[in-house]
Length: 253
Image 1 (cartoon, rainbow, N blue to C red):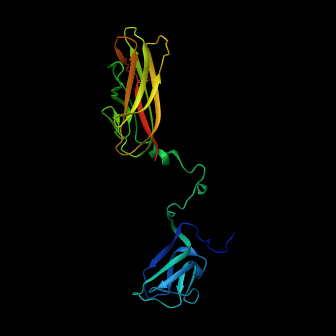
Image 2 (tube, rainbow, N blue to C red; image 1 turned 90 degrees about the horizontal axis):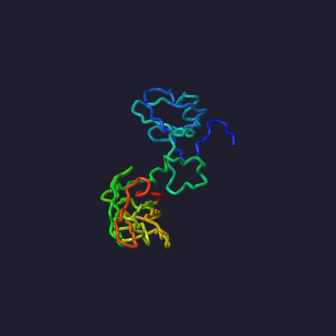
């Protein structure tokens, strides 16, 4: 729709106010140009003046019908001028009001943190047929210092994507029956993945695990490994940034 005069302000705007230093005069200067007296609301000593009868306005010129005194309080409100954009009320904006490209990666980056990734820096010997904590000790990154003492304590409630992998190897040519990777939550087995050779002659198992978990501000997570070998011999978790690692990042509330 077209308008004659100053276009009106619309949603989520507040009107601009101007205070005047008064003196014994009828002429004042407006900070913003107007079309006529109806574009402003003028108040003298907190009494609104009648447009045209009490004052005239055009451009930046304001002329009063009667002179003011230096003790008078005078201000105007620009009826067609916006002072600033103000925040809409909570829960008043829906997805229909958002442009397709309005939400950028920078606006959602907080969802990805805290985040970390770490790996095993030296081979670790473990016992047969026993769940053993993997001593993940070398950080690749740790955004909020939430990984320490081989465990991840997010400290921020939400949903997290946790991923890990363990390379378990038997020494001396001894085969194994079952290799497993376990995710522990608050000291108890929570999620597992297993590699069963099903009778094949296999000496090592590389077992990955992934899970979406819900955590409160005190929950913590640890990585464990398990191997059941067929006969004697040492079992080692092998050091590798690509095969024995542990990581996580936040994906939502």
